[in-house]
Length: 390
Image (tube, rainbow, N blue to C red; front, top):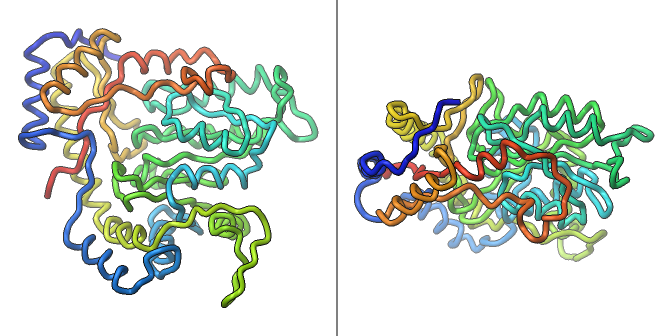
């Protein structure tokens, strides 16, 4: 890693604001805003005219097929949001009361919340500096030091609880070393569920993220690379699990022309047809969005290349979607100066999420040293990353 600069230097901050203005123009610059056209409006209007605006309609099925095809998965199941997708995936992966789930402390709170919805307990391990995602080395070290196998099941020696799943996240669209993580999970018989909320369009080699585990989940929130307003998606290659996911997310209702019979406690996690119509219009533009966002990322990379400050670029062998671009400041004080200056200038920037183990509901969860996580928490800043208006 390069020696980082103290970014209190005024002309550097002024130059950065100028670069952002060159990309996004005058006025307030948000961190990431959606891009819509008449196509989205017409698609939604067509659904309104059809009267199939809620959980029934062909657009949902078509959007699921489009997502499965785009990611290379066999099956895709639409949900009301990404958190719901993760909740159901973890439920079907075996997370339940008394079990533990290994994840990363550097993540949006929904990752840990979905574990809690299943009454599982998160265990937080470290990330890598280059991917900002789960470290295979940290995962292997934790499991080797803390796990004993009983009848093919991994148990935490300290708590006595079974470890039912592992949830790495591809932070800000940068793919983690998922193949290594998958091999480690397989060795300990731990279900792998990929949190791909931020990585639609990101690849490892020629493989889309979300293809290494039992399930993967995506988000189509308003700030994501494509949006359905609110929405999520589960992908899997397992036909039986796909059918179970579809059943659970649609209130566990048995198919019938007019009778309402529900055979288990399910979830009302259905994506409305209105949202799916918007998603179909957006996914047509995804490749163009990715190309435009890469141009933005390259502009930032070129700017920071002349400074002893680090712009987070994609790891070799991967292709990131650059959902949210990231820079690393010298220290906490420099980070705060950057945040204050840019936001006062009308350029929205934000720090890394508060680490999950520092939130009151998760502060008693087990962690490792979180060395790189703590480093990033004091230095990382997200900078404007929207697709420029085209």
